[in-house]
Image 1: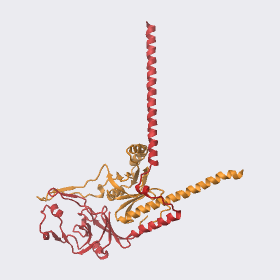
Image 2 (image 1 turned 45 degrees about the vertical axis):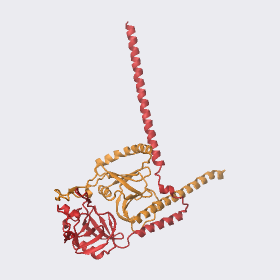
Image 3 (image 1 turned 30 degrees about the horizontal axis):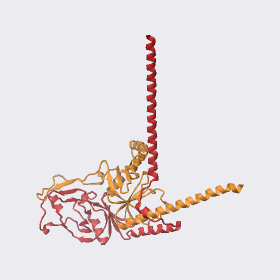
Image 4 (image 1 turned 120 degrees about the vertical axis):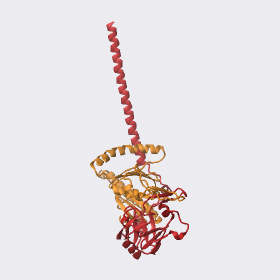
Amino acid sequence: MNDWKNSLHCRWQKVQRLGSERSRSVIRIALMCLLAGFVFFELLGCYLAFRISIPVAAEAAAPTVVRTAEQWQASNARLANKIAAQLPKEPYLVVDTAANRVTLRQGDTILRDMPASCGSGNVLEDTSSGRRWVFDTPRGQHRIQSKVANPLWIKPDWAFLEEGKPVPTNPAERAEPGVMGDYALGIGNGYFLHGTLYKRMLGRNVSHGCVRLGDEDLAHLYRTVPIGTRVFIF
Amino acid sequence: MRIALLLPLLFCLSVGTIRASDSHLTSLQQVNALLQAEYELSRTGKPYLFIDLSEQHVRLKVSGLSLTDWPINGFRRWGNPSAHPAAGLVRKHSLDEPERDVQVVNSAAPVAPSKKAKAYELSDMPTAYRMRLENGTEITVRPTPTHWLTHLRSALAIPFWYLSRPLISDWKFLRGSPYNELALSLTEHDARMLYWAFNEGNLCLIRLPGTGAAAAPAVPGTNR
């Protein structure tokens, strides 16, 4: 009886050992497969990334131009000169809306660096009419279109709504003297470089999109900057 | 016999010379394509971004004029993140996207807004974000590590970055688009400035390292 029991026990242990060995090898094979798959997909990804370039329509459409090195160099020099020809030869203004600074430059030389106040970036929404104003200084390239001494501010609708006042129907009620400083230089679409009553706020984003400047800087610009001067805002 | 031994050497030298002149031509051609693209952009009068990996600078330009530039402290690229011709920015994405203060008024019954709106300023801009160009190129911007902890985190992220990109490439390939990424490391201030200045719709040019660094003629007055 004991012999029979012993042999059964031995057999059971053998089965267990065999099972654990099998499961271990199955796990090992599975891990190997996973690793192989990972390596395969890694290599495939590398191949796809570095062998297949972005299809560019213009490149595909462009006929293959056969040129010598000298011809390419001449063409490159011509293009560089064409780009250089776009650069302003006369003084120009650069408005940095993040740093709130205006610089008057000529070529690479900074002629005058001025603190300013640019757009606050806030939003005003009128639930009644559905109108929405974003008080950003317009980015891009502009030109000085007008120069005005003793400018009068013709208050837009948002100025009344912000103060909690009704929008007047009589245009004469919109005029407000003395708030834009001594001069204003228009850059189009109702945006100006002008003076301010809040000189302590120069250097901060507080305006409704116009560029506010200090009195002396504004007077200097009014005197030196002609109409047509380029204004680059970023 | 000696002449016969010299023949393979001569062959190798001639092949080397042909390949070198080919690469010089390719370099000139790449510079030409880049200048052509920049010329087209400069004519529009709109601001564009010029990512110069060769000189490690990001420049914001209008009409060929460099308005401002930010040095690149480091970069990694995956695939071919070129932008020839220029590609427009489709979307900026960040975990902490800045929000503008909105004031609501009613013109039918005007009442002044109760609270003063906070300005949308440079300090609100994120330092870590992703930008997607219309040709599918992803540009990731991260601040340059300044503290030993951020150095450690950044060092640990490098192997993960290189291991994960092939898998993303596979996934994107299955979806029918190649995956190209450019990871830029800028100072916190410059990263914020880039987010501030480069907006949806603006175009971007990328000059890859080694793209005719010696062959590119300098454009006068552009701080190159």
